[in-house]
Each structure stands twice: as C-alpha cells, then as structure tokens.
Length: 212
Image 1: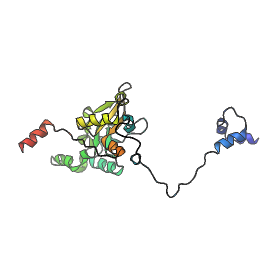
Image 2 (image 1 turned 120 degrees about the vertical axis):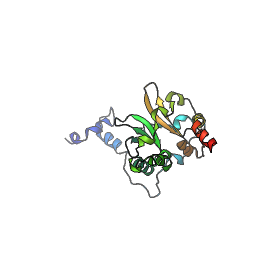
Image 3 (image 1 turned 90 degrees about the vertical axis):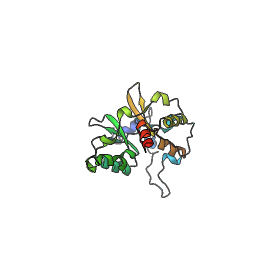
Image 4 (image 1 turned 135 degrees about the vertical axis):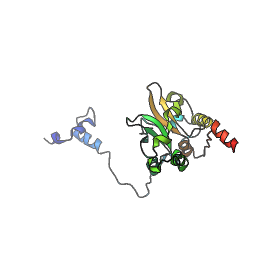
C-alpha cells in the first residue's frame, strides 16, 4: 500500500497521531531556501550582548562544544606559524603523538625573535620544532571550571592582568578534563575595548636591563 512506502521516520514526527496527512504536513514546515544577496556572515564581536560584568562563561571557549586548535610538538615551527596565520589562530595547544597536551604555542613564540637564538647555535630554520619554542605544560596557567562558573568577566580579566597572562586554560578538576580556553584578545573583541596585559619581568630580564 501507499502508506507502506512512506519513510519510517515520518511516523515519529507526530507522536500519538495516526493521521498520515498530519505527519507529512509537520515535516513540510521546514523548507530549504537560498541566501539573499544582502545576507552576510557574522562574528561574535559584532554583537553588543555582553559587558565587563557579564558571567565569565560567556567568554569561555568550551572544548566540549568547540574543538581546540591542536599542533603536534614535532611540527616545524615555520610550518606551524604559517598554519596559525592562515586560520587566524593566536594560540594553539601542543600535543604529542598520543594527542595528549604537552604545552601551548602562540604566534609571538614563533617569530624571529625566538628563532634567531636557535639559528645562531647552528640549527636550520626549517629544523626548529614547535616543541623547542612552546610553553611547557607545567608552566601553563589554568583556572578551575567551578571557579569561573561563579565569576564575572571582570574577575577573569583582573586575575590575568595580575599574572601578565594573555591566555589560560580552564580545567574541570572533578573530571580531570582540560575543558577550554580563555583569551584576553577574545574578551577585548567581544567587549569592543582594548585590554592591556603586561608580562612581569623575570629576575634574569631585570638583571639584563640593569646590566645595560
């Protein structure tokens, strides 16, 4: 019979109703169309839906929803820089062959300022690996997920500024999951306001300045 030829999926559309016309009508409420010429792509920063007092979770990149940008520690640094610039990535998570986190890398760490000292020691530019330039996992700063659940954007900005950090990871310490990332540059774009973060000088850097 005709009804037997109907896709079985239709029968689940209108629960408790055996009227086939009702089922078909419900499915037809969705209609694929073409975009209009005036339709344009949007980005989160185009909207003014948050402010400095908004919940910190609104500027948290949750890896449960959005996959992180990953780069293997064995990748040549020059290749990593090219990829990150191509895809507009400021910070990537560095992983080993088992896809476990071993550190982070940002565009600043991949520039000539950090390559030249290694090149001067006899390393070829193309032979320098991400693993030689990255910030090791033990040095990567984190915030606990349960802490930011009750925090505001202002709270997050303040703690990052205190430590001179542009980024930090977010960890669910109950499940031992590295759940996400918070970035000062992302926050600044969403708030439409510049945020200055100055990295405190290390003792060695202070000594070097005083020496000169």
